[in-house]
Image 1 (cartoon, rainbow, N blue to C red):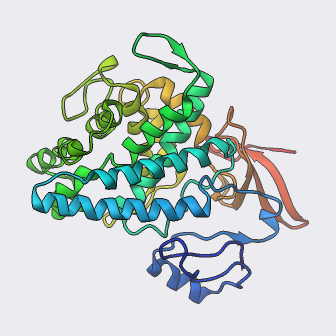
Image 2 (image 1 turned 90 degrees about the vertical axis):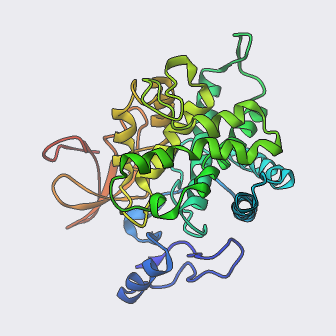
Length: 357
């Protein structure tokens, strides 16, 4: 197989481990996961003319990597000293949130690479950025299609960029309080005990306290404090329900859970995108706001374009396109006896049901 994109396992700007065009081998397949690379893009007949867009430019990715890494380091130091997060660090994150918004306002709606952040340092670092990208994409669609409601109850369609910047900053720091949770609890491979769960729940308020000196806007702080609240009242730290959970945390909750399910951790492998989508879908109305889920499902496909999937009949295929109105019926390509075959397939079927195109 021929590598379609450079593989970068260090900070943006560092030399790639492998460059596009390299012929891959079994040896690479063995070594790349050890370097933190879980998947690669390849060039072959099945992928011909499939275009996958990156939501962030190379320049923005470099800014994000530097600023979020510095923020995590500063947050750790602030915890040890008992002080809050320095305001200049948070201001740099605000600038980064603006750069991310600028990129995401221009990116296409479909065929996005949402899981290609292997160069970020660790789970907390990568998760913060991934949740920010996904949350902003959900917000962009929700506020463009439905508008947003201001504090006077007026429906508006203006000031989207300003509103997305505030959300982006809150998403970037949403999990900063987890630095206060002991690693043996944070990375425990099994189910947490009741006592351990109570410790875990403290990270929401810990994050708010860390950020207090930086004077973030109340709606950005609501993301940090309330992204584990659920509209049926089952969340934490306050057990808010219904309208008590504001729109920003509702968006954050969906993005946070999806990324947690589909990310690899020290104690679990990454679930494929369709599993993450089903977790969100199944929690609609109880854990997650139905309108936010509706927009999430138009942004995140269970079978993303360019990804390799296993068909109901056992064959391996590559997704070539998907309709957001019927996301569980992607168009796929397989290598048949006469060459590349393309057809739609119902991935919800117990047995293969295909319609030739």
